[in-house]
View 1 (cartoon, helix red, strand yellow):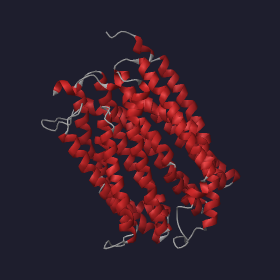
View 2 (cartoon, helix red, strand yellow; view 1 turned 180 degrees about the horizontal axis):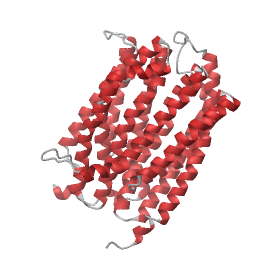
View 3 (cartoon, one colour; view 1 turned 90 degrees about the vertical axis):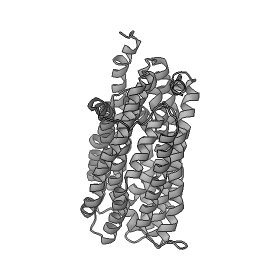
View 4 (cartoon, rainbow, N blue to C red; view 1 turned 30 degrees about the vertical axis):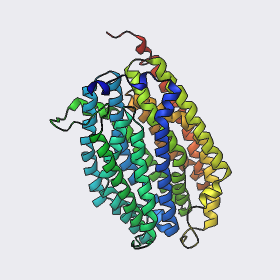
Length: 466
């Protein structure tokens, strides 16, 4: 059995286009499903009560923080496991996977405390509307206090993806998404014998889906044979392994957390102008853009272990091939998203809210603001495609802080200050132009970093091992 587990890895032998598609398509499918149930969740909430939707939009940075910590740590594990497999160092690959699983419980402890004590003070900072505050407290207290389910599932997904197994992670997400979509209307609107719980019902449906996904992932991880194993018996924390995980994981956490800070800054700008409609439009955009970005992130999940494996195996030709093909595919996905944002923004906006659910926002104003915003923001999509792949490359080869630099420039150095300047100069309507400007600026920085890698670390891959 050991011989079978340690046989030649397909990431070093399979034709590259076929390899990328075989590893990315399951992840793209699962991430698209994830985007769909996030959007469905928001559609149900907005059609039940726009105050609830505003609350979820305002407090979404808390959920982004949870995702950042979970995915960031798991990305660190993914990168380390794939590199150790490329080096044929299977013991250290198993150790990295085990450390990742244990680290889930430390991550959860933080978000349990945040859920218990941090949600209400956070909501009070951004709203004085009692309905909005209570809806936000109900939703995010539930999601954060029961976040262990999603944290463990994400870790197991990334661990298996590092081995080239993309099917099971897809099934984990698919199960959670289907359960969530089924229970959302039942618990929000109180259909059949289910109670009408509103926003709290949406949170419970989300958590129940995550619980089902976690149980399935644990069964598969511990009952099936994989190229890497979680070995809890006799486990001892190793400082160097944790350090290696967070060399990539910590920048990934900060990188994704920056999105939460960016959202806080933009919501603060909109709040200063008393533009509730802009807050709602931004919330709707953030849900809908996941249909474009999630497939690219799914592509990343397939490309990252390929790049990491071939970097560890010193196969520069295959590594470059994966990068080039990844950029082409990502740009194609983003082009489709751009076309949709320009041609049918009204159709996408019309899914959110109805005459009964609107209170503080005029539906026509929401539609006009949303159509303008969607078309302007979507100009950043194609430059973002190249930037996303470069970020993945930096993470895959253990250069996590370079990924962090790109995200830091895009979302803090560029977007928030540019949006503020545009708002003060031309009005809040023009804050949306900050997105394409920031994306182009960060892409230039990413290309300079990549050129530096090509001339440095990547060039040394041609040198013989000593």
